Amino acid sequence: MEYSVGQVSAFAGVTVRTLHHYDRTGLLSPSGRSRAGYRLYGDADLARLQQILFYRELGFPLDEIEALLEDPRADASERLRSRQSRLREEIARLQRLVGLTQRAIEIQRTGVPMTPRERTEVFGEITFDLSYATEAGLKFEGSASHDEAMERAAGHTKEDWRTLMGEAAVWREGLLAAFDAGEPADGTCAMDIAEAHRSHLTRWFTPCPPGMHRRIADDFVTDPRAFALVVPASEQRPGLAGYLCRAVHANAARATAAAGAGAEPDPGAAEPDAGTGTDAGGRR
Image (cartoon, rainbow, N blue to C red):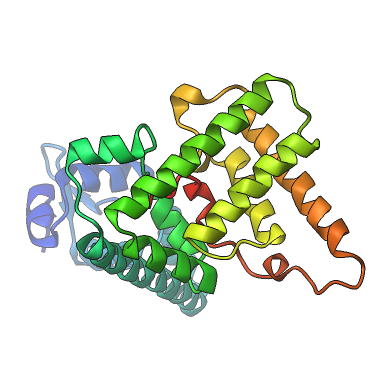
């Protein structure tokens, strides 16, 4: 029995355009034509279409599907096992995203409610990028420092946020003044500013040893969203993120040298950073 392209489209659940595309690419060419030149599909064509749709549902690209169908020596089992492995990885990633979403909902529910005006008064131009927070949550999943930082952030009162944002503003003024004055990034002034930032994170979020602080500062250079949580766009200067990063690294080296050769290893050197350094202003 033969079927028109419209009939195949209807009972196979694919569009006529898709069937035309499969024909043009050679993935599925109908075995017959009507006297008027219209495509006609036979039982063998429908069986091939079912295989195509099966592999497509599993996420196989069309070129791989064609290779599987055309080469009788192709190892379908091996390809299916490989696809199964990738699907499991994707399921695990999506499950982590579900957990992060639930956690974000819980934090929002327990956070301090503020009106838009109050948020402007407290946070000013510092804005929170949800995409960056989600990526940080995935990156630092399981980090004790990240978990502690999020818990402490959720527990801050409105007055806590006012205080820590005020501290951040004063710190930022010092950073901009040092940069504009041409203070060297590895000089005492810049290193003291870096140390003040590290102390701020420790005081309001989570202990931030020098090793962790270095990785946080690296984020300022590689991700504009991270640096925007420290210095709003209107106050940024070309090269400022790199300047702060170098100051942090210099300060970390100073701390290591001061500790002496017999000091205990920097606990921040092994653990992933908490993802809070981008919150120099404290915003979650």
